[in-house]
Image 1 (spheres, rainbow, N blue to C red):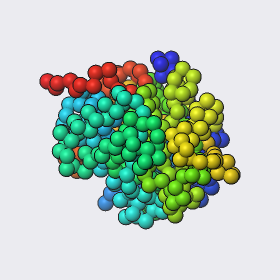
Image 2 (cartoon, rainbow, N blue to C red):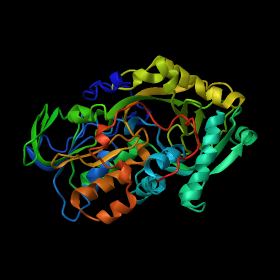
Image 3 (cartoon, rainbow, N blue to C red):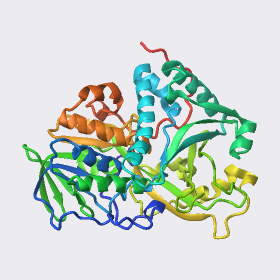
Image 4 (tube, rainbow, N blue to C red):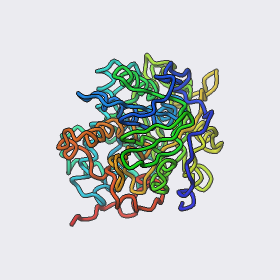
Length: 470
């Protein structure tokens, strides 16, 4: 893993695989607010995914609006957000025991509540601003095939409910036995299942909607304009692009897995991981009105996540399923450090293509007459050594900020992280940040010394007992 973590990420590559969400592309895909780049600006954001777009919107919602420029290396929202599964799912119980062990009960509880609040806030924002993004809220279910994972789920939920209280909306879970998993969720062969609140949407349409709101407030969006280098000028930052140099007071890195390209200090601290997604037509025996929940399928050393497209959306009933990392050569080792989203690993794609029939068994039926797979693509996520995002001012740098490394979990992390970062930048309502934003997510010198060893919270610990806190 040390060798994989040492690979320089470089710039996002031209001509990536086509994401289901980006076909057809938005009218903003190649947007440039002004013909020429400005030579100076108050705040420059790099990256136009959910994080960068939300930061821009929050900055421009201040009473005194700064001048804000957003650079995107490729087309608008062409990175991880526009390539994920569209799942607003916290799955907080999966990391809770580890978080209690490393952060203590109070901080672990804050993370659970934060993820739940962010999940709800994403859909509330879409409603409030009438963003047409196929927003759906309901239940999700985790189908569990491994005995240790089943024990972990039981213990983790018990601990969440003990710490948060069993009436807290973030601690509401329901367990189903093997028979119920088969009859209610059409998934034979499981130990059982656990369901809880979640949601889904088109992440691309959502971010395009946020960008449109920010543009209306004065954002200057420049697509197909990669930041090649950032250099401190003493009084601000100098940002080099192929179209010219921009001087700015503040730089915000919303660059996720690519961050070390611009700030090499974070090489090996934020490590890219290529993920694979497919969009599949449902089998002939699947419910005609679509599945009622979103899913995850959890086994000993990994998982898949699955989102049925809601009624009323384009290709309603289509099944978005991604994952399969550990099925690749050397359990997916070579996907770490990889930023090539122009290609796909055939082993992972073949596994994902066959997984729907495997998980639903006879409930799948025959494949759709037009074929099972509608689309397959890849995207680049960002992972940190301790399994948490890095948000805040960068230590030992003046006016350099970051919101990145969202662990493939950004749809329930990024929106409120963007809000918190803007509060840190402006100094407004810092009490709210202290009360609600997890300390574990803030950038510190100590966190930047950690060694990356791989993705966390995917396999059960050998000892499922929680260590006593001092």
